[in-house]
Amino acid sequence: ELKLRATFFILGMAARAHPGLIEGLAARGHEIGCHGDRHLPVHSQSPGEFASDLRAARATIEQLTGRVPIGYRAPAFSITGTSDWAYDVLAAEGFAYDASAHDTPSLRDRPQAAKGAPHPLELPTGQTLWEFPVAVWHARLGGVPIGGASYWAVLPSTLVLRGLERAGPLAGLYVHPHELDPQPLRPQLGGGAQLKARLHASARAVQRNSARRRAPAMLRAIARRFRLIPYGDAHAQLSGAGGTAA
Image 1 (tube, rainbow, N blue to C red):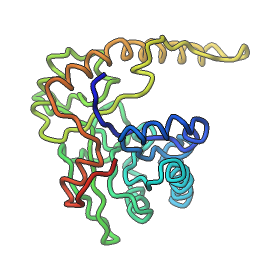
Image 2 (image 1 turned 45 degrees about the vertical axis):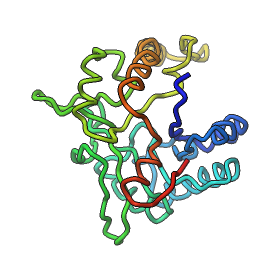
Image 3 (image 1 turned 135 degrees about the horizontal axis):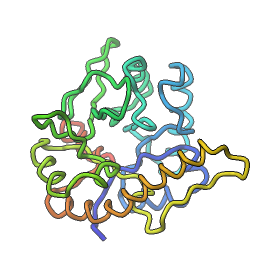
Image 4 (image 1 turned 30 degrees about the vertical axis):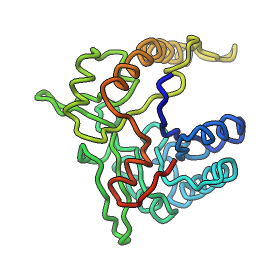
């Protein structure tokens, strides 16, 4: 509908379950990035485990698309202040950029607030990894996370658009697949699930369905006002890598 090229950060296990979907996305010119293999939080892994997870996902994506992914986004933005060793692992594994920085109060133990604009991380190993943060509007009362569809459900459209204008060029966005799904999400729990688990699942469904109802219209409004490109293209522009990653 919007005739855009985007970056899809794909799980290895999802790619193996739906290979035709990944091949189709790549054939349409979209960039396929890496979201890890099994959706494990980065901070729950050791550096070695993290590297193994990256390799498994990367091998699957390369097999299906013929291209090695150069970009990574952590599941649930889970590179924390105590797991920032992940940047060294990403660079060592050949990734060119990370898109996991999200300066939002909802993420506990997030790294020290990153620069709002894309910037290179100069690592102790001497390698460079580019960081593409999710867009945050730094208003007078604090940061307003405007780059994610999870927040579009509760933020006025005019505030999101104004915030993106002030966030600077190449502001990062994200949208989950379920936020564009025309069908409502319903909790699927076994009969033995405890009440606490049922309440949590129901609350999550309400939150996600709210985002689902707002996300398509908000994405259209953003696309009308701004030029949207894949992360790989933005990295090529800033790093002088040349060409596009998609």
